[in-house]
Image 1 (cartoon, rainbow, N blue to C red):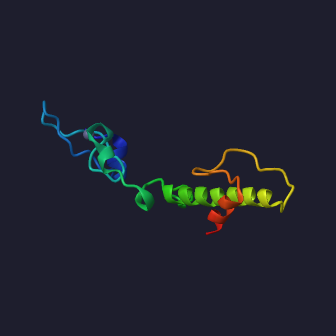
Image 2 (image 1 turned 60 degrees about the vertical axis):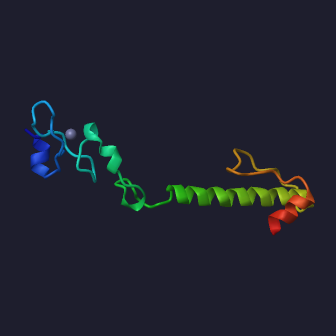
Image 3 (image 1 turned 30 degrees about the horizontal axis):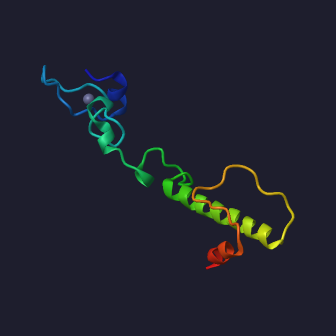
Length: 114
Ligand SMILES: [Zn+2]
């Protein structure tokens, strides 16, 4: 018999059947799936905007990659400013962005600008 909360709220039930008893599984189906967590629900989980936990998209893989690219660009521009003597401010602290390579010469700056 399904759980009382499933009957009351109309939740989907797992469609898997037991090999031994031939009875259907009584677990609730995972969100967006036809089966429960015990019967392979992870295979059907959607990603991106269709995912159940998607709220605003600021933490998606694409948004994180874009943020990392912007951070890398800013850190390299800071390197260029220090190399060219445009500023005497302290260097920014903390972890550098993914793919960041420190600019050490004017040739590096020329490559950055192109
Ligand atoms: Zn199941």
